[in-house]
Image (spheres, helix red, strand yellow):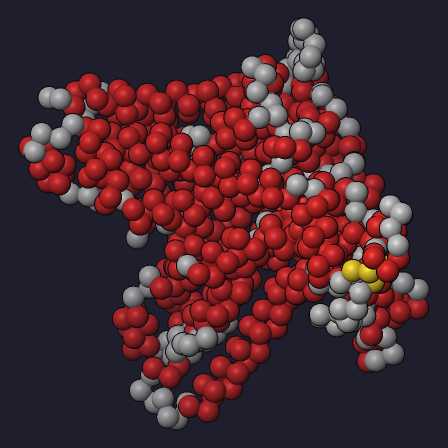
Length: 312
Length: 306
């Protein structure tokens, strides 16, 4: 903790060279230990998704498992010959993940919901942010104050009244139910407003001189300047809603066709006995992978996006 | 002049949605918390403060507050402390810092429900890796530790199914998941400290790392810390995914993990007791809003000060 600056930058770098190295070594040791703890569940998840049931139960087989074919009891129960029911663990786990539940459908639902939410959030928030930043009108301060107040409200906390409202209009168990509560992102409005404040007025005035309408200014002038901020916000939004479990759990009851990936996984857990640990972990891997891969490909943008709420 | 009317169309959708989705539900929650409403019933009768009285008198809700506060007061200090510690260590490294940053941030990205299921497996009393690892330590010097010796003699804790350990185990998973987020916020804060300040501090005689931390780093991280603490509070108050995944019924061994969001879900959705669910919602909103207002007040005071 004490090593807050590079000790090597000081003038007497040579004199402290040895101390610096031991310090760096200790730092690395601590960080590596932490990294191992952080990675442990990912390792477990991946490893279990590769192994046969008996290897999982007896904790044998190392990371990969022996990958020897084993007997699929369910297949035997269906009346097939035992020789036809010998399966390879990896193939068994991953095919069962897709066959036992419509996992592909769940992934598609997740995609539809997250993308719709983001697009609607932008359509609603961008004009509002533009008006708050660049237009002068009566009541602007009041609207902005309202935005600041609404930032206080976590949508999850008001799930109950929202659920009642949706139930009253008969919208539970629908895509609309998954999307509607998230259509307004006061955080998005606040963020884009702050961003638009930094855009010079001259740019807007020049566009007006050219005879552009206010709509055209938003989508053709302001939107392109805001792409970096929008991408960060998009990552923030997509990650939150792809991983969200609480809200789908409340509004989607029973209708499997509308399950999002987290719900699908949870359902798997509900009826998983010992034999199904492998396929369940395979499902978990499949659900976690898209975001992790995107994150590894565009780390800087992701970290920017997720921590956006800290940049106020 | 063309803009004079346009703003209405820009503001209106957002304004309407803000009212319908955020503000009206709060009023509905406030109203319902005074009734015994159930979905499907045609009417409901006014019960006054009865729901609130029940929440503050029955042992079930005492357990709810107990579990929520235990979780929050373990997870917030640890995620903030570990986040700051990791950020300082990583910031002090030149080259490999980014690698650690990536690794520590992974749990933030991964769906908590998936990782919770994996942790549940890891904490499984007989086939889990945690107890298997602990058992390997039996017969070594670790047995001098009383707790450890007892574990070897009888069994190690059941963790998630053990009344005495469940809430702490869940908290551990919460810390595991959350500290990377705080680390990244602190790294951003550290990056914004001008290096010249460290030189100035050194000239003033702050040559030890700890002195420089006290003199420069910690005060300049003040605004970051205020924000990190608030957002950690709000995030940890909302813990739900794990609890529902581990204990779909009842909130854990003798209700020791019966956190508020789960209580709202159980009362309102599972048991259709909207009145009491709404009352918990109102109390919950109260906590969150007070915390955020304290944060804003601290930030404003600071900006005047600096």
